[in-house]
Length: 330
Image 1 (cartoon, rainbow, N blue to C red):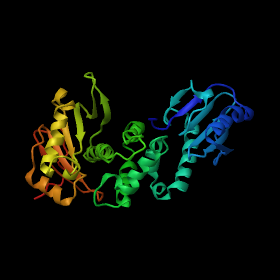
Image 2: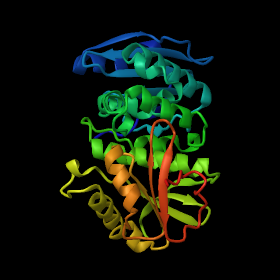
Image 3: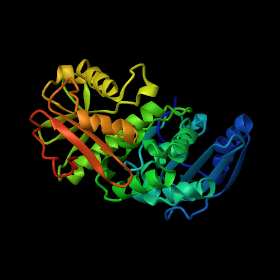
Image 4: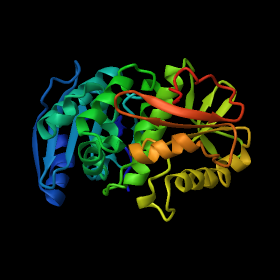
């Protein structure tokens, strides 16, 4: 399975003839391809071409007298196999800006409903145009409201558009966007779990906490966030109809138990955030009313809705102040 979209950089010298012979011709022979001018002018000193394959794949190539950049969700021409890969942020800004303009314009043609949300489109661009995940990731926002039950796609998109527009996750774009996955099929449970991490990030940011996602630890584990010296792990239980358990209370407890036997078992002082945003109103009301233990303390059990409303409760002594964000139900 291919990963998120990345550039390949070549330090060879390129000419239009070489591009035709060593980029276009192999693509055309293997996949059927058309080579055209880029939709936008490349940076000064560069020439550029856009490639469209018969199977729907896309690739961009731009070159100067000193280097060249390839970006595509198709097979890589053999001449570029040994080149290094770079994210958008690791690539020279004029090149990255040009390529993103090209892809965002293509997204507007292919999925205008998604392109309306500028920050969502930009943030998830590496997976929206990944080789294996371009259909599944877009489908997740289109058909599943980004993981919110009983919500429209506009509800889900507007919620994450507002959060991503704050820029608090910009420095972690590839880390966070890649969690959505680049598999061909929609894995709803895994994708919802990913958006649970975004929900926790929003909760922490709204509470005024800075954080670092996906922290590698000496134990060999990577926990979801570090807030100052506090480690945070996230879990997102699924409603009973998607699990073998038969009640929302049991689902929450089972999810917490799974974490306490894994990462939390090694880092027992970590805070566990249990995102119940997958539960519809009636099931969340049961959880909210009974306030069950989740097998670990400190823990935050919460539910976020696309309106921005967040409800929840805290178990144990949490070394992070989030009480002002959680609307405590009567």
